[in-house]
Length: 100
Image (cartoon, rainbow, N blue to C red):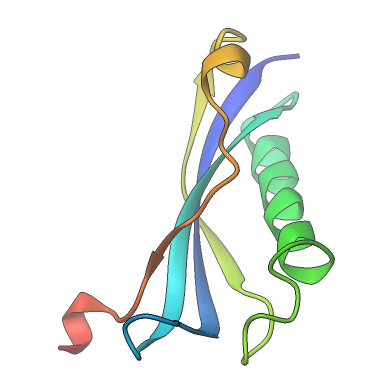
């Protein structure tokens, strides 16, 4: 079964930020998954992130509930990525640049 990198965009959250005074409203994250197709890879990556936001470390942090996820891209990759790519974090942002 091939490996895929999937970049997801999470929106619809509001997480208070300790330092800036602004609320975090979204994030980007990439997951490395094994799947038989791009569609399955997307589902597996979404399930992984949804689990983090409903039962693990981010559960209950968002004042507006869990994120809405959309897929930015899916790319097939090498099994070697398993050794070099951790893919568990998030790149959070405070507000949409277009809203300024």
